[in-house]
Length: 174
Image (cartoon, rainbow, N blue to C red; front, top):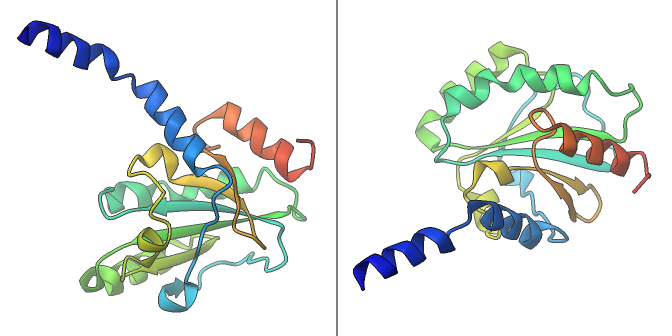
């Protein structure tokens, strides 16, 4: 009996279905960004207030901050592949405890990242958007700026299919 239970548990856990389910639960939901309660790192040289879309990269408290921050420049390269008049702004939201926020702010400023960064020391992004799964694969998403509606979930830097879909969406082809 124990073997049957263990085998059924193993075969019932399909990580691909879990990821698909998580993404499906996110699409159409509205993201809330309480930017007044977050610390903004003003290193962005190309901040566009009038963009139609936000591409949000969220780093929660469980992710390795050093690893994630060291990859921020990959986004510079990715965003440079778009025209200057792109309808999309890249926004980083980093969940960090209050004690490390000063160090993190100084470090990020020294990295000369070209995009908007918010440090969330109160965990409000996670609280206000509790539907976002803990899976890092679901921590990059495209949403409408005006409504916050999530249109696409996935990392276009690491997934060519997501990149293709993202470009179709922002060029109003889908």
